[in-house]
Picture 1 (cartoon, rainbow, N blue to C red):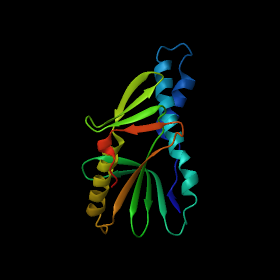
Picture 2 (tube, rainbow, N blue to C red):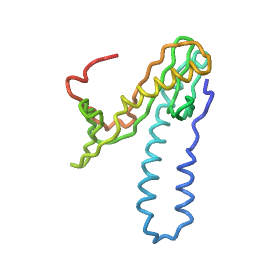
Picture 3 (cartoon, rainbow, N blue to C red):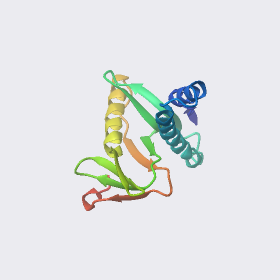
Picture 4 (cartoon, rainbow, N blue to C red):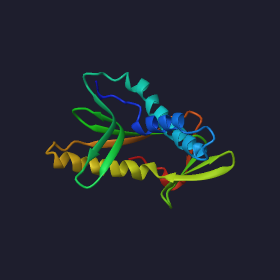
Length: 171
């Protein structure tokens, strides 16, 4: 059962409103469009997992989309949180195109696309941090300890994922 529905983020709505209001020759338009396109890609990626999640038995799972919590130190955001009686699953969605390489030495994700490389923060570190923060949040709110697992979902089917041999371990 979906408890918290996914909505178009306010940041996307603000950028869309800004583009409607500024002059068509404004020098910041390319920058605004670039940021808007990144945010829209992320939102589209997050929406792409809704279909597979729809096959889950509603009575067995609570689904929270775009969850933002405070652990008494920091706010943290989870794309999708699945809650059952036996476990919690954090789903972090990435909609990144190109060839993606997980670099375990520098803890970064490197994308190669059209011959150009770009570094992204390591999503493995991100979900590990989210797990830790969620455990703290459960503890601070006097909720029972429950196993927390996480998945990183690459929603773009054209993405090629690569890593070095030292990353070939399953948790």
